[in-house]
Image (cartoon, rainbow, N blue to C red):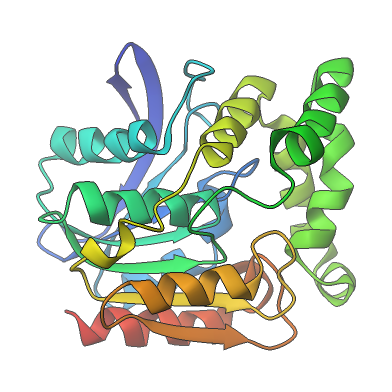
Length: 266
């Protein structure tokens, strides 16, 4: 389903009993809401209502302006909630989705019942625009797609064992990365490069769980631990032999943490 937000169409889907508490799921840069495919049946079976969003320029959502900020992306979430007349949600985000979650918890404290922040960071990633993002921008501009980034992205996201165990799912994710718009990727990357909420994290009042794979090189454990240390009362969990998207690679284990966390705040 699509909703018009500031002149662009943003895609969402929502499933489950209208009277059930809502879990809002946000995805990583260069993927879409399909990153949560393994969790949707689990959540629905446990009596949750599930809202998944595609970020600007990802999945079925149209791109936005290049000068996108994390506050603008958090506002997209709030606008979709307004459209759906959902006052509050339990927010779960991975990577840039977790950054959006941090800002959502800071700027919309009355709407965040809880936060689960997965494989994310509290500030711009090491390397910055010159060393991290600009070489990627140059590669995708020349190609006209994200295809040049897809193999390396998959290596950061999942282990080689996952590719051997679930080749069809590996290919599906790889193809989704390739289909992400260049404009959407660049806008999200710029939002990350200008992101820093280190001084604001102590203001978050929502119960928070931070979860990270011990082999996550994109958003390493140290930054995730910092988030948990700065948010009052936050918990930190580190998964062994996991990289950036444990919800895909270890859906049963991740699902246990997810459900236990949500049930604790139901």
